[in-house]
Length: 413
Image 1 (cartoon, rainbow, N blue to C red):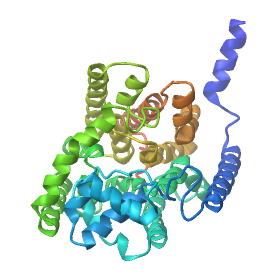
Image 2: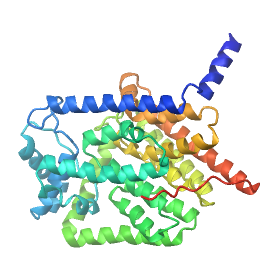
Image 3: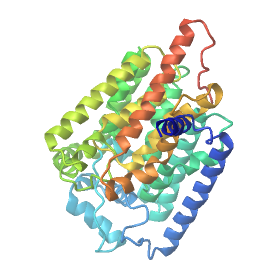
Image 4: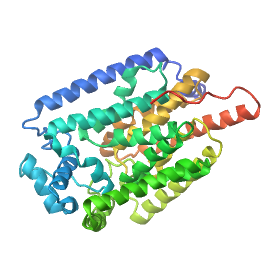
């Protein structure tokens, strides 16, 4: 029995059955099913309200009405729940639930033009523009030979589209900024600094840049973040910033009091809470994992290389306590890089399975957490990060022994 189990374990680790052709077929099937499900969901909606009583692109209603308030000269009202919710109810009816806006005023600069178009036209333009940027960046990491359907079939894409969220923009800024570090460090810093709009995913960026001694990019990143903050202050006034800080306790309550749903969260913090750990333990373990991710990131980025983007993306996902499944668009960056390099150099034992689990994670993590009470997301993200670090270590060893190092990712974006 033990011999049989050993063979089964070895077969699972090698995953010889998961070859390029089968992966191509599986991702195409998943894309078709996802597209069919999305079209059916839209067709069943009535008056822009889906079967669950939410607007199509539910979270985008928060962005669009924030833009509406900004264009009316009422930017501070975005951070007043009653006023912001009133704008959403005026758009979709009095029975609509509230879609919160926890973002700092720099994000209002991005949202400001959205209400210049009707809601659904604006939603389409938003997803098309940010989705195209995401597509170009992920394709650059995956390489020109990647099956295009694999990028579109990644379940985080459908989830981000369904929410009308900013996951495409986040991944494009992080991944694109990392790709530009060598060739155009100032532009790279601009991309990375723009993530000031989503500050809970940004702390790993300066750590990575300092570790790699990317001083030009670091300066440009800091200047961009400060510039966005200053322009938002000038554009929306002191009251908007005061409103943001006054609304911060609501964001904290959403995290600590299960207002969003611990099963929907993908973080270590939410995993501890889902397993009935108290707040102190949740914060302590989240902090420990964040520190460990930062230390690994420092070790990886001391020697510059193609690992920088994948490592930053994976570390950012592990470090943030507030993480939803649409944020897993970031996971496409390390997955794409690992798959590309694995296809060229061969996969380590267990690597294919981890990549498959990472690919399917956005599709099933919420379901598993909700139905079974098992939070799998942090474990899968950590496993992806491990294989990123492993490949970086092999590359460094290869360079030290004067073997040919792995090629840099230089596809244009």
